View 1 (cartoon, rainbow, N blue to C red):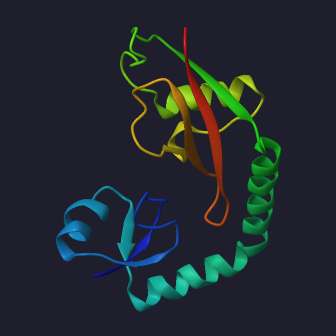
View 2 (cartoon, rainbow, N blue to C red; view 1 turned 180 degrees about the vertical axis):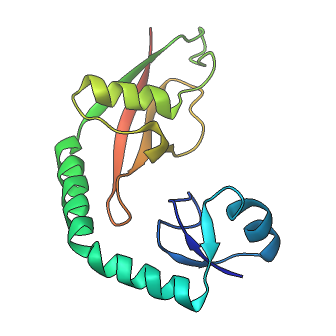
Length: 147
């Protein structure tokens, strides 16, 4: 079943992408939630026209995302966490904590754009990926230290 996405969906695609999904997933989840619409010829034509008109706006958004990625650059974040004697932390480091640390450094990034590579349950160095735009992704290093 072909659908046109109305919103960015992690692991599936970005807004206005034409995706092929299983019929049950499309009919029972994506369409009722307002995340997608059927890819009828008229909807595809309308999507193409909207994409064409929004091309210059999209380029501006991409440039802003690239500027933010360059500004973040090689920023090394330090995330404080309560830890036991063995170095195991209580709980886990979440994208919220990384977003807060970035905000403290002057970079406003939404927590939904951050994905952590693996689980962070011990003290040490880790990486996370920030998805700023369809074409702009930035890896950022962070260190988990004991409070």
